[in-house]
Length: 405
Image (cartoon, rainbow, N blue to C red):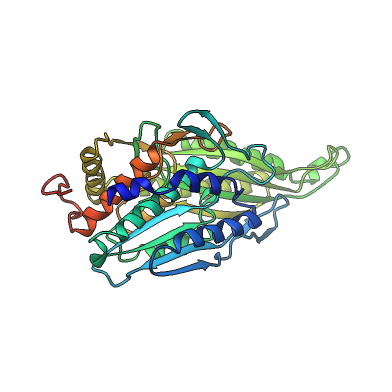
């Protein structure tokens, strides 16, 4: 089984898939990617479908709330009535739009491939497919059922696939997500902070900047004041705040009557999330009063914090032991980054969300894949899946006792 996992054509698949631009807003590229992945995953048994995205609204720079389109999501369900059921997830989108200059692949040196999405996460999807293909040829099949979700919008928050992920997570014993490892040496991501993205629409009143400026209500100034209050209010708290952008304004001789503040929060605990929302409400009320403007909040905490609870520690322990038995040293560290693992953990399902390749410099034109990690990580996943199918994972128990190869 492990030899079969390692021998899968993962590098060729990764390169072919990375040659397709599937930026989160490139609907044509995402449609092509979905079709290619559906064809690749059709070698597995079960019911495979491409699911339409859920409706999602977006705040335009002028403050209008309007629908925004997303690509379809791949959903494969295999043996849904098996006694042990798992969830495996990945994403087909990348952060590189179709007009981004980073579109091509090149070898930095033997074994190090530079290219858009090779690590995050076209390589991870290839690892997932190789491991599942190997499992399907093993004696683990009768006891193991699983769902695969490969969504098209992870890099923009998974708003159109969040409900699909929640439904797929229901009743699952555990989950693996195939983000690249947190460090090139293979270190996994442990606990993760949550994330909330908000657009705050500020409506003021326009006026002539020279003749009667005091008759106006400057929405841009109010948005800037709000950004400063939110940042200051987070400094002594357990969450971070990043005011990222203000849309609005116009000619220099007009008091601006609209602005949109874009801001991100990173709470580390559920209590932090509550405190951050209280800060938003308080600061918005104060700015509305002091500037005589109206404000409308759009957005949510789409990624809940992901703690390392007992169930998660047990699953990490199983993966670490599998790595040790394969001669791999597996460690983990907490991170402020977020992914679909946050959403899965919020459903009460333990998840290791960095089962993908080793590489680095993701989200930049320096992104690289260490190609020897393809067979390495495919074997790691296959062994972990096999042991879970054999009943060797019990949430909350020491996973190093009584394991077999």
